Length: 101
Ligand SMILES: [Cu+2]
Image (cartoon, rainbow, N blue to C red; front, side):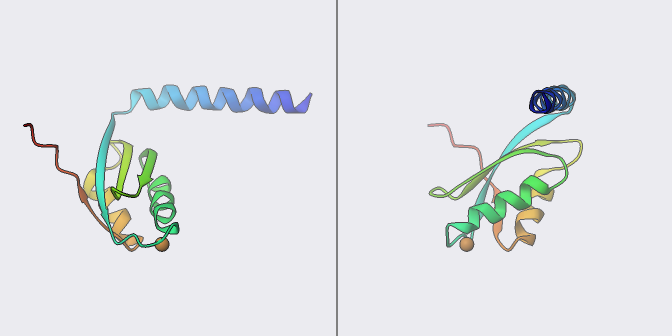
């Protein structure tokens, strides 16, 4: 059945890309975002980041306005990711690590 073949092929592709991703230098960064004002803003930022080179995964939330990005540090960097956010019309900077009490 065609559907089964499609599912099999999709699974294979996902498994292969997962194994390639495992060899890349995966890192995470949290960016604090500025200028979001409506429910579409997080979607706009997430879409821009998801299409950026070297980005594996993005989560954009409000309150706090932050983007959690998992990326390949060979292909991109926090500075490049900030540029992506700025080009989509928002402000961003790396969230400083939480100070220890
Ligand atoms: Cu908006």
